Image (cartoon, rainbow, N blue to C red; front, side, top):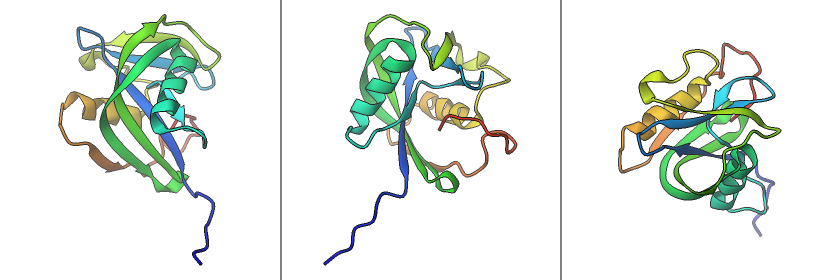
Length: 152
């Protein structure tokens, strides 16, 4: 008999949403003031697609279709695995929420230079490479010089 252990990693799912001009949608978190990609933790009863659709709706008010997998990002120091997908808007209206007090479209050359999580910047950069195969990366370093910043 195989002994089962509870899961040891949390799974996160984040969206790269581009507009028709190639700008990236970022959300500013209310709990930290930092810019990040819409997304968050997948709940135990959800598929990855259901989790990302729910998270994007909760944070932005938008309904999305989930597209290609951009990358798989391992954060073993935090027991997290983060999946990042290209997503396409299919409805809804951008609105502020309890989780995000501002949303903005950024040109890839004009991403915020401050208060933008470096791990999320790497994920945007990966998406813009338009590689067919997904990236598989370790993101072991603290998000910001050891400061406690939320957001996978």
